[in-house]
Image 1 (tube, one colour):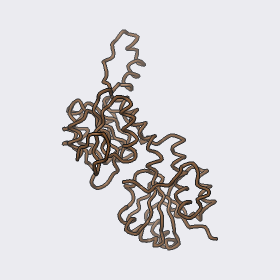
Image 2: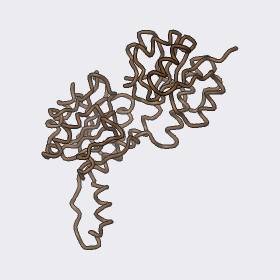
Image 3: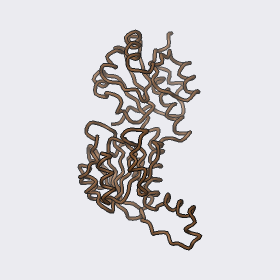
Image 4: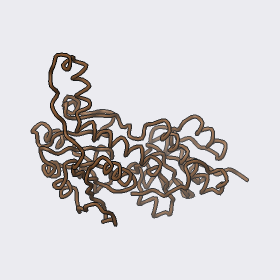
Length: 320
């Protein structure tokens, strides 16, 4: 029986690449839009499945693959995929949100603690000899009793909320719909920001969420408020954020994602009230391997080899 033909557009660990090659006929996607168009014109009708990581897949790209049945994405975010066009065709979309949720939530907790307890600044203060000189480090702020808002209570937000509760925080949220949960619900980002001391972004990047964190939301968060972004960079209007920081309209920010990665605005780099990490929320050995395993498992299950599904468990459809 011939192997299913898979368009391979995701750079994965070597062992995973070998596993995919053993189970499927792989067609590696070339780089460059012109080269991709020519490649799809030649091979598109044969393609039944696709691996995806960062490639931009729009309606035209999808139209070149009339037999495409499933897209298996290494990432949680699907902002590089025309989801509506794929779903209109009945194409299955499997992403890794449920695989990486715990790891991303853990980083968010680390950023929240670092931001409020001044961990980064305290490290520098000690290394510079101020403790030995007898100086007194300024007191920091506790998460105990803090009101924290989660914007986007999907898979990652749901993993984050109990972690923050375990630290003594009170949880509020905004999502596309109210959920049957014991957390305060607010219908939009501005009203959520006005009700909390810290706003953590966990939403997908969509046309509706692009720059949803603007000057009005930051103003509602207020001069004692903190912003954490573990979602996607363009969810935040970076110019508005920089202006808010420069004018002391918020207390600080912790950012794992940026609008134009890997370029980060100099104003954010220079601001000691901002903690910066280079898009590492899921970047542990274990989680990245589990994400890669899930890419294989989603395809394997779809094409009828469930006996070799392993550790990533049941394949789940993408959550938006």
